[in-house]
Image 1: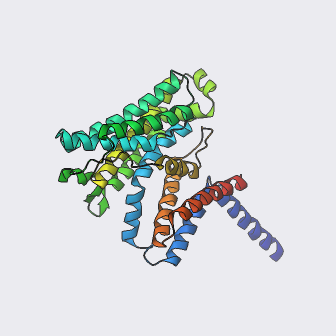
Image 2: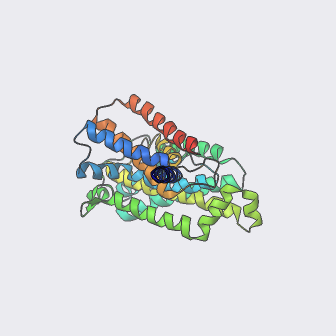
Image 3: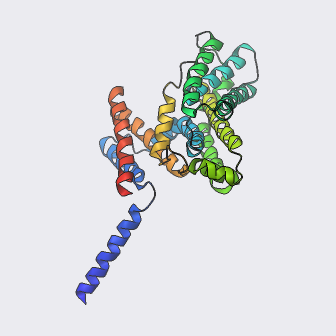
Length: 324
């Protein structure tokens, strides 16, 4: 009887372990926990409330853009122009507020609208001209960055109105406004992806485009809309970044698209499309933010940070590959 009891306990333990490892993308949760423990042990400054708020503020732009990118990648596409759209949106908002005395809220809305238009351009080139998304956005990455430099003549727009800083630097209570925007975008996009028919269309498009067509999904419309959403999020990110910097700089957000794509892939979104969960992308964004923050606290040099970020990406994805 004692042996049977021990066997049952062993079997139950095995079932419990198997259940844990059957959780989708469990690897990134282990990594998140591991790096939190590691940095907590390495520096006292890490595990504090103030530092937690700093991390959330730092990841707000990456997170907002990553949520938009998630829709594109689940639909079977990719958008490499995110960083350039962020720069262009910020430059437009700053230029309107500084040189044309446009009210700051309207200037920000104009910059965000410009981001949406860039996304629309990506969508049209992909669906109507039939150019692969990676080629389209690789081209617009350069074009949009060039337009940002042309608008400001290669200079930085300084001397912004005092109210211009509010979006990127102000707080509501103890929470920074960019963090509130991040949370609102997450809730909205989570609802769209999981509760609305548009979300089902996005998954269907990435899983099997031909089957989606047979099922009555308007493929071109859905593809275009996911690029518009991605451009819209990059536009919001550009407005926040420009406000935080209190200037319009065409050189900002270079390489941001790599951090965004890393967060999306870390979150388990399949590059082939049709698979991914927004909450896991949020965890991917947190991993990137915590890594960056912890390495800064430990005075790790920038080029070592690049190596570590890339290694963590491979290890996290590798864990889930082994699990499967």
